[in-house]
Image 1 (cartoon, rainbow, N blue to C red):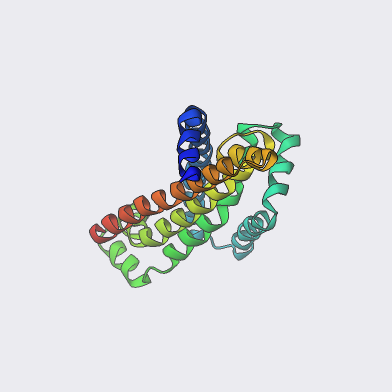
Image 2 (cartoon, rainbow, N blue to C red):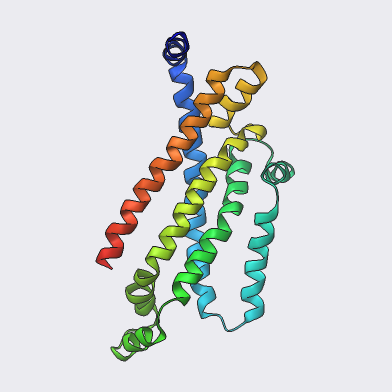
Length: 214
């Protein structure tokens, strides 16, 4: 009981600080994911129309190489480019988000039956109409799966952004380790987990709703 009452007292004393870290975490994660979605999905769609296997494989290879860089090393590599803080953290996380979004969107587009695309063409749909009215809606479950995977990864990896001064829930974890404060470590960890689970549930509901309507 003492442990629970101590933890409640910790929240009462530090809730402003805890919510600031949570808000920082959400801002960093969301910006990295949003940039990755806006940039990567059009690239993946464009890749399905490419005739050059070399160029397509090169893009996948670059994304693969970025994914193999250890997370701490990726954050460290951003320091000479952008210094420390918010911007390098967002860039590093954006680079990590590329591969799952690229692969899932590409796979979704390539899974569409060519006869369906030909039928749309026969109905007079031009290239953009086929992409936006036929191909993207049919690939939507794959795309959403990529977004959900990316979101969970990015929220987890954002905790490491604290090592370059970006803030977020990782600050609580690192400070807790430095001070040997279990309450800080637990709070930072559990909030990151809950945030990832909550967003996965929300995106799952969006996926089911729009997949049924597609």
